Amino acid sequence: MNILSWFTDPANWTGSGGIPAQIGYHLFYSAVALLAAMVIAVPLGILIGYTGRGEALVAGSANALRALPSLGLLVLLFLLISPIVSGKLVYVLPTIIVLVLLAVPPILTGTYAGIQTADPDAVGAARGMGFTKRQILLRVQLPCALPLMVSGVRSSTLQIVSTATIAAYLGLQGLGRFILDGRAQASFSEMAGGAILVAILALVLEFTFAWLGRVIVSPGLRRTVSKSSSPISTTVLEPATT
Amino acid sequence: MSNVSIVTMAALLGIPQLGSLFTQGFQLRLFVPLVTGIVLCVVLAVVFDGLIIWLNKLLTPWRQRTVTS
Image 1 (tube, rainbow over the protein chains, first blue to last red):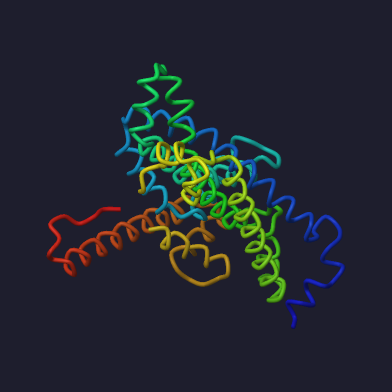
Image 2 (cartoon, rainbow over the protein chains, first blue to last red; image 1 turned 90 degrees about the horizontal axis):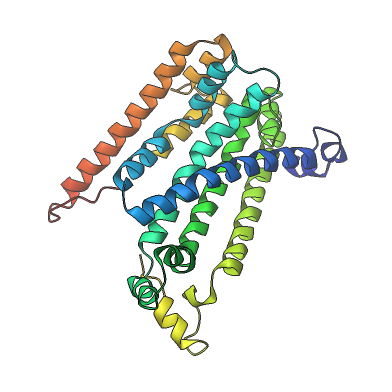
């Protein structure tokens, strides 16, 4: 097995171009893009879900964004930015922007859909107890929206991690290096190794988010929770099935 | 929709299709093939989307309204 020997070759595991270093770069670009996307998408999603305005506009533009080819966008941004900024930023900035554009729609949709589908009974009960609108948003609607928000972040993360490989096309580091360099040297085991590493990384992150979702989501919102453990919270706060 | 845009990645491996316009634009620092590629890609995605909606309508005539996604 050539791929196996590529993985077990110690030379591939050390140095600045080694597997751990490239995974580090890959995770770094992905994390920056994910954070930026969340900073943009979560407040916007809350605003849309809360006011109920601009939903059609956002859904439409989110669909249009999906049709945009990431690679073309990357090169276009690079050509647009290159006369303005200098240094390494000229490569990093287009990559991050492309990844953010990719990651915003799922988080945005998850956030506003989560807030809109928050159980009306729970919202009504909170209002009856004298909650202000702000309290309802922060203490009822947002916790109810958390499962959908987390799943939005999850699908964004998967897309970011797999698409971050194209950073290598501009000459940046990351796991895409193995794929493109392997292609250039006709070393198919290196290409396959890079692809496998990306898949493993995506799976690990997926499991991490699944675990995170279980930890931060209120127990009353879990659909699998047994009715006998806390009958009141499950019946009141169970989100409407979408 | 996103399938059409992902296919362009294959240009990185040298498989010729619309994405080849991107690599060409990058190598020559030219905007024209680049923008052409992006526009064609979006047009293709919209055409496919329309085709699927039309096919959906054709195959499920008992439905009054087609579900848009």
